Image (cartoon, rainbow, N blue to C red; front, side, top):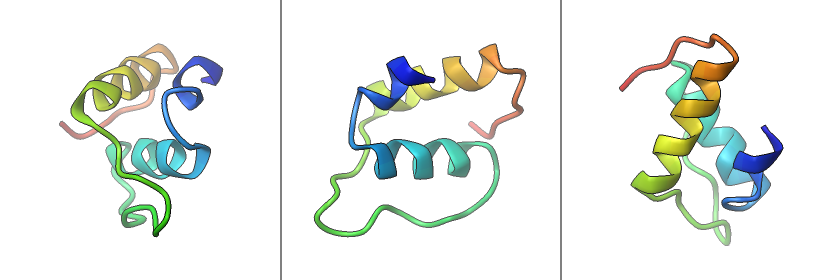
Length: 56
């Protein structure tokens, strides 16, 4: 989890992870930047390692 949190701002990474887990929490608000597809892949790997089902 800590390795993934270092890939972006904590709010944006947490919100994206929760969204990928199937709970729509919306995007991070300005001034926090959006997450790239490369970071999405790392978040999905982290969710898999914890056994959390995800969409996409």
